Image 1 (cartoon, rainbow, N blue to C red):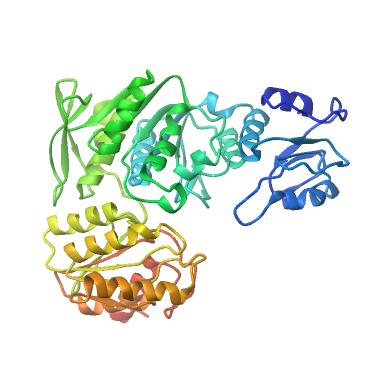
Image 2 (cartoon, rainbow, N blue to C red; image 1 turned 90 degrees about the vertical axis):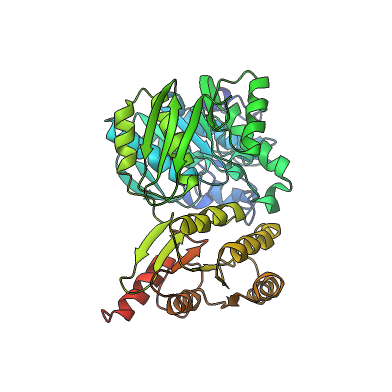
Length: 488
């Protein structure tokens, strides 16, 4: 693609006076290590690395042109200075890959909790209906039936457009994080349906306030196509607020919940051993049977049902797909020890998510709950106390342990664990910093009829080494069960 046309089509002005008419762009990247001859390099100011420091390397490796935010003076190749490199990258990627979101039925899902489960439910329904469907999200990307490793909930604008361009599927589901929205990772992407699951205390280390967090999430609904629709969970304070916010802006909305003003009304439900939810769909009562317990999962299923109906998928096809839904790795993933406790791995890492996870166990008739969890280092520290409070109220034994340290010092995190232990759970808890030994202790303490619930990591691998030769909560549990039964 010719540089001049690429820049003009992206709506970016102020190109340097150097002659660009004959410059052809063979590729676009924001990583100097990926530069090949004829590439356009976009220098992005990252959180740990500044791409502007690698402009000369990019030119030396064959970059034909550079975009950046800084005034760097003379350069051997055309240089375009912009206010926001990330935003420019999104616009450039959209044009370079041929505006791929316009050619798909695009579904974006945002919210604090439920994005992954809802996306997997919807992916299952769409596939079972006979339509092809891509999924871009936290656990993995599924494109043309093949899986690709995922490193972020929402990839960069460049990767996202590349994935969309490579997809031959009719429908694309994208998990949309608040970080991605404010960092222009979805710049130029347009959606047919924007879904809001809920909003709870999380990521305030980044957003500062709940209002800022809400406004970040609301950005998704500015990216709807002209005839696009917002599908919202209305049984949530922020869902109600979003509904009002979007109605004032004349956005087409469809609301799910128990309130009478909702378009799809939740009529009745049971969250325990045989979970179901009754929906009033235009006067017809529809019964969704789900093989996953928990009220939060019933809401996820109701949202998935609503979107599928908008896609003109038949009710019976939707109900059958949900009835045999296999679940999601690391989301209330259950392991049973015949002569020991039931073990659950769940990604829950907010107070609300922990509440739903532990409450679900109680509704299923658990004798005692042993809850094992920790906190992400360098993340929202204000939510930690509330997480411990919820655990202490619903668990019989709370075991505080390590999660990913990230940039936080080990000794500082250890001190935090003991401080919260003394404040909230001294009478019914333990602190065991080694995560694998914490799980081992919980399994030894629990008896048949008890539940050991390990939250925070879900499907993710450990970022640091622990005592046992394992790399995830799932591996830890399987290792300990095999060891107990003498298979290793």
